Image: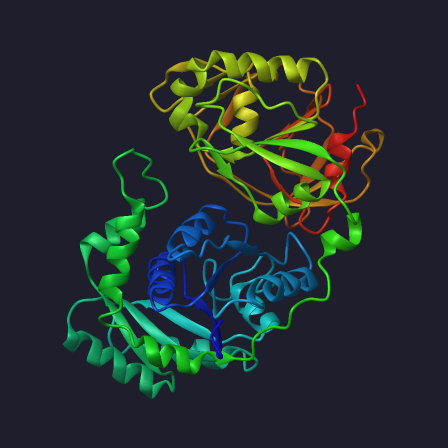
Length: 453
């Protein structure tokens, strides 16, 4: 562990500014310099955290990307997570979400609020593709809008030439924000960022893409100066984690967790909590032929529509999961996992594939539109769980046809308006489009284990 510790948040005026490109490149650059790096992501995004882990995994360092979200959990929980995962790191890199001050309600839960909560500086990322001196008033506004926020510097993206950067450099200095370099306009980098998470073809080399980003960016960004500006005191080691104080010791249960290319949208803290109840056994619904003997089956979200044919062809797994659920086995499925438990799935090519036939529903990617936002879930009183649960909904698919799905909860959005999203139950199987976060409401899995059928 290095003597000095550095931490910063990468923020931007809006989405599409280049935060993810820069985050992945900096993570890789730092680990190649011998840093033990811990990545974080503001908000509920579970795709970026996977990419963060990949970028920061180098030379024996395999950190999990951690979400910091003050809508789905308390500020105290976010601070505890940051301290717990940063206390043994040399650097913590936090990627912001959307625009710097964009939150569920005004700036509530925004990247700026997270940075202030953690006491870390912000490095702005500005897309300067069609901009020169106008960067000055933009930066001046971000620097002065909230005096409690420390804006340590700026890195410009989509810069055409070194002379273009000189104009931007002057603008930053006049706004009293230190310029720390730029990302040259490079179509290879732009295409890589756009497809890094969504390109699932077997020949797509994400590792090579991340390495290329790092090699390009370290030539034009002042890495050493960035580290100097963001050096701070290393967070103290928390006295005890919430999981240890709540559960004490493992229950000895077995939790079967689906994890492969089709199912991988999983919050790390959810896994940590499940691990306190017993042993987690990962399996692949696509490739494995046997469902692990378990006390709870967890089918997370992912891209099942992209692998619908392969999932459908693995009839042995589908039949075992169907038998498990029909016999009253405890199961929890969210988004893609719920789609997999349905009767069938229709992909983008309008092809119908049989699924597990546990839930009486057909999901489709036809006429897809985005469903996005935070969700609040309150279960019906006869379900037995009385605490409000928080989560996030993000999907393009929809339920095309369905029978009686047995909705067991009321679901509202961040503004407390009804959403129409269901929380379904079949025997001891609970399923929904919602990705719940129970990293802080750590007693929720106990109710999943409870068999009421």
